[in-house]
Image (cartoon, rainbow, N blue to C red; front, side, top):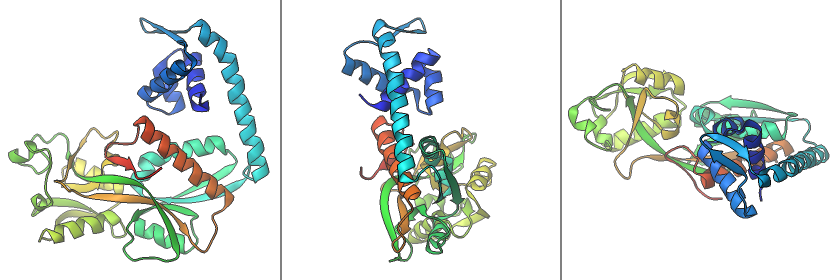
Length: 318
């Protein structure tokens, strides 16, 4: 029996609605239902009656509810007391992250950390991976999610690879001709880097690893990309593509919640990038920073087990 399962159970019991409970817990509804089912299996009894859309507690559920609330309250008290002893009622975490991560996975991980450590102030520095490496070296941030391998080996940094993410060619969804503007493109499940030759592209500003990865892939294929517009941050690049200015190579996770855009995989072996958590080797991360690192790891492991990682993203190691 896990505390998270009990929290999901209490949320459903209080809302009498699985979808609303999932929203309140910031989790996908199928994942919440799966955890409730696992709890029922472990306890050997159904906890809810689900008849014609009405969710009510069974006798077993009625018996568990006050116990679950008390267990969750005790666990919260324990966290607070330990945090008090560990000096985590106050503090600061300065975290660097790329825009794609800020718009995707990071928000939910930060929400969990803030819930567990409400007294810790969070400061997020958003930028390209190269810029974040420089900020780490200057001591401007404590931890950073960066892209590896680094362009130049930096012996002053410690990196832990945590996620691998596919890159896709993004184009406007409303264009029936497909990502490359021709009838042949729409019939293919993927595009090749060579297919981008001569096509207008939207390019990130200097300092983004995505810019360098795209340029390197095009040059390896024997051509220089043609820029329709360049110099944008992530959100600007996606908006320019949506407006029909060109296509772009982006991480797959940034397409969540953007129905105006379509991502087409690159031909095998395609392009991918590795996301790592980095800190300075010569400076021990603060207690608060170490707590955030542990929270992030736990969040990613749980998301991988529950199947809620964004499409095209996989956990490297637990």
